[in-house]
Every structure is written in structure tokens, then in C-alpha cells.
Length: 396
Image (cartoon, rainbow, N blue to C red; front, top):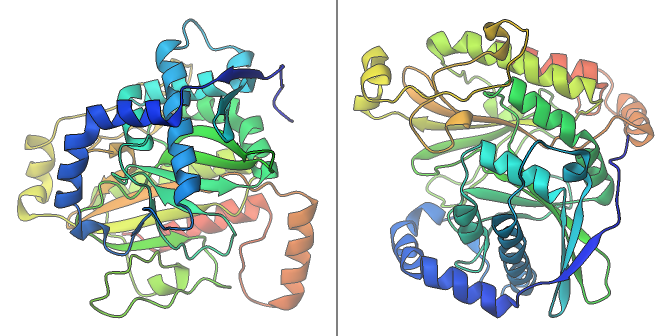
């Protein structure tokens, strides 16, 4: 089902220079301190500065997103959500390019529900500091960027993937309201960018699962299968940031202690939702961070943390159906789970691949090409079950 599409609105946006001045004035000192403080933690990520082939593109994205966020700051959505919130298309005309904001009011509401201040969102994504590029191990042709503080993740998508995301957006928001501790990645915006009279490029913005990045030692992208699921690790001592895959994880275990039952239940809830949407090929992102001595043990989690939670919608379901837990008093707490020795960053990403004719034909071809082996393109029911089984087998 495609999202309804009323007539698009087109407005003249503030110039990129105006956006740059505003962002620079509020975050110039912070940006300088950030560069000095986090230089080492960014090794392996590539700053998109002048001379980089993507510099002009990302400058357009920054200026466009600054202006787009300004609209939601000047005209915040009020009252109850409407169908128009999910179908609005706002096109802002800049010098040399146009930026479209799709379902802007719906995403503004979602950001607000996460406690994300629009001013912080604008400062991180606007012209205050260069985006970072990392070379993904994904086989897709998508481009991947991080905001300069590494808090937000940007990824280009095909038009059909954007269509699927927008069609599912009302149900996605409803799922997050019903299950406020969901592992699903938090989508924060969907946009289009057209340079001159060229073809539109689409991209999404989401909270980075791997945030804050300090002390993260390993990163994985798990699909629960084996074909094309190995990445050659970086040489020891290399600063390159790599996201490894299923076969790299062999012999390892996620030690969660009493949190394990929560994770297994939440995986069931979230993958059941994705199965209902007829979606597959999503990944469980994971990262490891060893806890400091004063962060370990049952006492520390109660004494040195603030008990935090988020409220879901009132429903007739039992409270246990929402699968709540104690959230760490840390940034990005919804994607953080503490075990006895390690802190784990966990999130389900890539939620836009529908099991249509294209994927059914791909499934048939892979069945013939890889007899007896497991691969990613299977039915949504089998995909969900297999990923849950992987988590159950690799946790304790």
C-alpha cells in the first residue's frame, strides 16, 4: 500500500551561507573542541573535506537539512497526528539544488518522542562540521555518512525502498509506541536531493546504533546466514573501522546474564512486526565495549545509574507485552544493553526490503547456486525465525 500523496509544497529556502553562519555561530567553539578531543576515535572514518569527491554533495545535504529542520522548529506539529503528517512532501529550492522533505511532520513528532531537541538535530546535521564517510562492507551501492559527532547515520536509498518505508511508516510509529524499548533503528527523516535538473537521490537519517563510539572494540552486521557473510579483518593495529559479519563471529558468545530473556523476547516482537510487513534482509547490528570496573556488577547498575524508561501507548495489553527494561543512563540508551562484563550496542537496521517478485526470483536463483547453504534471501517468515534462532544460539 503506497502512502497517500497530496500536492507537494515548494518554498524558497534560506541560502546555504545563511545556514552555515547560523550553525557556525552556535557550534563553532564546540566543533573545534570536538576535532581536538575526538581525532583519535575517528581513525578509519574519512572526513569529507574540500577536495573529497563527495564534498559538494554533502555541503548541499547539510545546507538543505539545516533549512528543513528550521521549518519544523518554526512550525512544530500540534494536535493529534493526521494522515497528512505521513504524506506531506515539502520541496525547498536552494541555489543549485532542491531538497525534499518527505513526511516531515511525522518525523518531527517521532524525534520529539525520543527526546531529541530540534536545535541539536539541526546543529549536528547542518554546516557546523564535515560529515564523515566510512567504507561499508555492504554489497549495496548505497553511500554511507555520519554526522560530525557520529550521532546520526545517513544512507542513500533507491526510490522503491523509500516508497516501502513511507508506506510502512504509520505502522512503524505505532510499533514504537506500543514497544518503546524496541530494537528497531530509530528513523529520523527521509529526504530527496536533486542537483540542477538531474535525477533525484533519496536518503534517510537515523540514530547511529554505534553511539557513543568511545571504547567500542568490535562491530558486527548479522543476518543469520553464511553466504557472503565473511569480511577480511583489518590487520592488527590498523586504525580502519570495519563492520564484520556472521562468519567472523564464529566461536564467540554474547554474555548478557539476566538481560538475555529480555533480548530474546524483544527479537521475537520486532521480527514478528517485520514479518507482518513482508520485509526481509534486515540486519542485527552489534558492537562490544568492555565495561570499566565501576560499571560492573549488580550493585553498580542500581546505584550509579538512573532508572530510566519510556512510556508506550495505553492499551488493553498486559504491561509485560511491552517488554520494558531498565535503561542505562547513557546516550542512545535504547540501543545499549549491559551484560556482566561487556556493554553491547544492538539495533535492527535496513527495514525497507520487501519480499516481492524481484526477491522471490533471487531466492530461486540462490537456491540453485548455493545448494545446502544458508543465504539472506528467504521468505520473511523464515528470515525472522532464523535470525531469532541465531541470537538464541549465540547468547548466554
